[in-house]
Image (tube, rainbow, N blue to C red; front, side, top):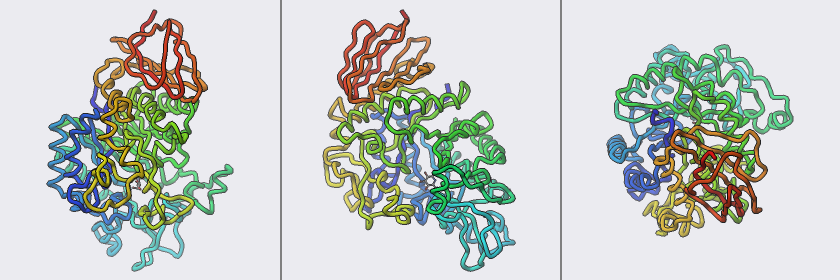
Length: 535
Ligand code: NOJ
C-alpha cells in the first residue's frame, strides 16, 4: 500500500508551534526540536503551513517568493535541517503550495501591473473599465475585484486584495508554478497540500455567478455575497482537470514517492466535488471537510463519514480532517462545556480508527480550546473586517503549550498571539504524564494504526443505519477485525454487537465500559476499540 493511503499527518501551524529565537513567532529550528515529540505521539507525516517569504497580509498565504524560505522562519538552511531531521526520524514533510494566488508584492504581480504587454502581463486577471467585469465575490468579504490605483484597471482576488489570483490560462503561470514545485521536490519534500486547488481555473468569459435562491443565500447577499452565489464559474471548472494532470505528472516523476493533497473550497460545506478531483491523473487526495462542519451528534457524524466513503468509493483514498487553522477549535466546537476532555478522547477513537489519511491539527491532541482575543489583539484580516460578527481565525491559531513554563514553553519572548488560558494545566508535558489524557489517547490510537493489521489496512464496514447515541464501525482484514464503539451522549447506553460477531480483546477504552456475552454498556462519553471475531 502506498504510504499516503494510511498516513497520519500532523499539521504544524509554524508561527504558533515553537519559537527558537525569542521573537515570539514559531520557526523551523524550533519545530525541528519538537520533532522527536511528534514521533513519540505517533504521527508519520508533517504538513507545514506556508514557509515562503510573505508580507503576511494573510499570514503566509500571500507568497512573495516561491523559491525561498522566510527569514522569520530561519531561511532555506533551517528548512534543510528540518526536512533532514524529519526524514531521519522516518517522517515525511509536506509543504503548503499556495498557487491560486500570490502576494501583491510578488515580483510577478509588480511586473504584471506595471507592464500589461510585458512577460507577466497576462499572469493575473485584469479588466479595463469603469466597473468590475462580473459579480464574483471574495471569500474574505466584498467584491473579488479591486482597482489598481496606478493604472485604474481591475484585478481579481478570491481572497484579500493583497492576494491577486494567478491566471492559470497563461502558459507562463503553469510553467513557473511547475518549476517551483519541481525545485521543492528536488529539495526532498514529500508532497504538497494544495491551497484552494479547486479555484485555480476560472471561466474564460468571466460571466456572473448565479445568485442562490434559498433563504440562507438570499440573506447573505448584502452582508457576505461570497456565500450568496453558486460558484459555477470561479470554482470546480472542467479546465482544472488538465492543470491537475500536469501537477500529478510532476509528482509521479520524482525520484521518491510524493503526494498531492488538495484543500477543497466549498462555502456550503458539502464537498460534493472533492472526490472528482482525485485519481491516477489528478490529485492523490482532496480534503472533504463535511465532518468538521457537523454538529456533535451520532447521526450527524455517521452521515458525514458515510458521505465521504460513498463519494470516494473503493478506488480513492478518503482523508479525515477535524480541525485546522481556519475553523473554530475542535474542543470548543464539540464541547458541551463540562466534558470536553472525555469528548476529545472519543474524537481520537472515531477519527484515528478510520481508513485513509488522518490529519491532526496541532493542539487538538491536547484539546486546546478556541482562544478568546480582545479586538485589539486580532490579527486575521477577515476578523478585523467582520468583528464582532465574525472574530476571524486567530482563536484557533494560538501557540502550542509544551510545558507548565511561562508561555507554555512556546517562546522566551512575547508570543504573537496569547496562549489558551489554561495552558499551565493543558500542555504536552502534563498530558503525557497521564494515561487517560487526550494526548495519551491520540498516542494509543496512532500506535494501533501502525501496529494492528485491521486498524492499519482493514476494510471499513459502517452500519447502514445510524444510531441515535452511538457511533460504531468495524475494520475487517485477513488478520482479524476491530470494532470502534463510542457513546456520544451523556446517558448510559446498552448496545449489543451485531449478530455473528463475538467480542475479543479490548485494545483501548475510555470512560466506563462493561461487556458480557456481546452486550456492551457504555457510560457517558465512553468508548472502546475491541477486537471482534465471527462466531
Ligand atoms: C485556505 C487557507 O487554509 C487559508 O488559511 C487561507 O486564508 C486561504 N486558503 C487563502 O490562501
